[in-house]
Length: 135
Image (tube, helix red, strand yellow):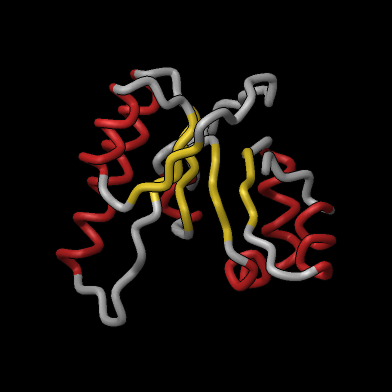
């Protein structure tokens, strides 16, 4: 079951947008005043249980830091875990977007999750635009 994500109106501009692969770096940029960031921790080819536990801990800490600094944090790739931890924003690549299926994509939109979506062609841009992404 997913935690209810707070719906944050997109009234704030994105401003400087930091993309980070480590929660300690996230803490530093939030401390410096950045208020929009993406935590992009890529899955290794063969993740083990310890890696999964570290990922969960980093995402939970990142989300707590974002709340503490009133920042918008997009979690890259790990949508299910991010939603379980209460994320209000996720970033998805095209493969991840397709893997969700139509029902999964509609569910994200219905919940008011802020979406960042990668696009590399006009067709991908059209698909992304249909979901009203934040960026």
